[in-house]
Length: 263
Image (cartoon, rainbow, N blue to C red; front, side, top):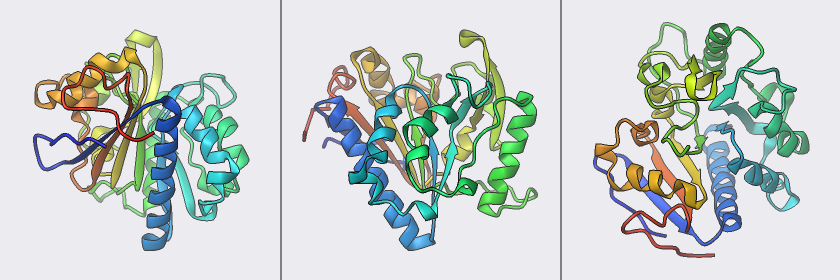
């Protein structure tokens, strides 16, 4: 394990492992421990999953008997960090991918799965998701505080985007809402995303990044975060929790001060 000090009060931990398989093992262990701690201390574990290809291997690992048996799924609530504005049966749906890889294979109560309704009018779906989260966390709509997710899982795009917070996107500048819709020009698609203030209120934000194609942007975000504010991922800084990065060796290759440890 190798850590880098942050520029501010954010607690940041960076782990570099030798392979994608090792990355998934480390991430699964982290989620098991976070779930156990949250359920023991607060009676439930509220997690926001990410989309994209990287977490699919993690989801399949969590669904395997060796890991699924270590999580008390009766007390887990699953949310999403973002969603494509497509129906849930669409192959591009983050919800569908998580169901096929994980949720259909573990005993989580149906009422504990809180999906973004990508098939609805985007702005309506974003407002409805914020309302659902307020109900889940028990936060009145007149209350300004952001809730504490126990864990938010994030990925990293080669342009520095995370969730559906893209460089120069309108959603990146939202300060009060919990979830917003944004039309993303570079992918020609509407997306729904959690906002930075909500993400930064999490008890733990966990980035999973693999591949040599991510090495340059990882270097920009981690080595010089104060100079990379145009990159959405560099603005993820949980003030009340911990920011964790798990990288494979290829993704960490261009970042000074990092070296591979462990399996």
